[in-house]
Length: 317
Image (tube, rainbow, N blue to C red; front, top):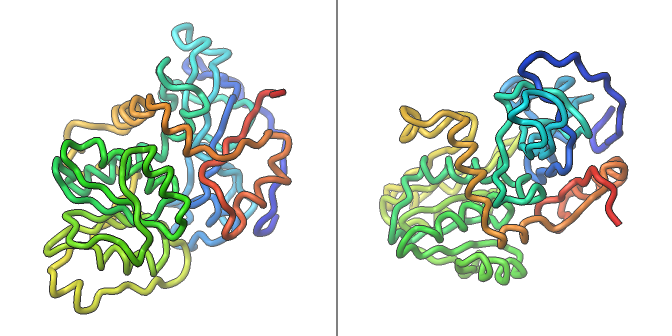
């Protein structure tokens, strides 16, 4: 296979062990950020092992079976999990067998379709731990994709916080209002922020984030750029204001929580946070699994509109 090619393939499922579960997939989420980089073959060779997803098949660049936002029903396995709706960091596949400890139970308050946002929510939660967000902070989030929206949504739940989402798409303003925070175009981005998150994966967005930060503020860089150099605006304002530029990545639990939290506890907390029905607005397309070879290239094309695409594995009218 080559960049921007997608196909459905038959695979033989392994013989399950005593603690393994057979999961029939109901939904999986398509990540427009990470999966676009992989789809275009832009994972740096130095990051091939680090970027491997759980249960990935094949090696970068191609052919590779990728994905990490699967939600399904346990149809065989330990008795206490039979019939349960679960989330798994598994590639797009209609049935799969995995160990039970790789599954996160989806609570009754979270519909299976919305649960595909769990991986993004976990990333957003970890970023706030890395940032040290607090009540009454003035927070700016640059980049209105799914991750930026979830970061802003969490920030807006802090008592007394003042949260602004900054994005080049004016249409994000309505969604920001529904989710409970403000909106600005880059040229009108507020300044003097206590904390800035950057998620746009563009040099222009990073420059906007630097400009929005107040004296000695922290800028949390969450973007994954892939291959290539990225210009960074680290000139006068960066040094004059003594700004901090820190990275956040979900592969490790943030140091501020690591002594008490493991990945399983963090994943369950992120899942519980999805009980807000307003977050359904972050899923903007549905694609039948059988149509994925045709639709995925459209959805991951540069400049394609929309947020999360939900792949549906059950026949729908």
